Length: 65
Image (cartoon, rainbow, N blue to C red):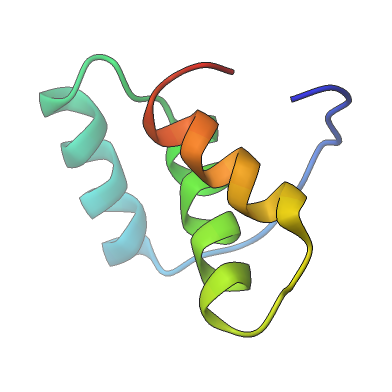
C-alpha cells in the first residue's frame, strides 16, 4: 500500500472486545490490518470493481503491506 489516511469511527463495545481478543490470539495481526482486510473485503463483496481493493485485500491477508 502506498499512502494511508487516518480513520476515526465508533463501533459497538462488544465488537471491540472481539477485535481485542482476536488480536491477542493472533500476534501477526493488529487493529489496522484487521480493519483494512475487513473494509477491502466488504468493498469487493458489494460491487467495487476497482482492482486496488482486491490487491489491498490480498496484500493484507498475506502480510505484504
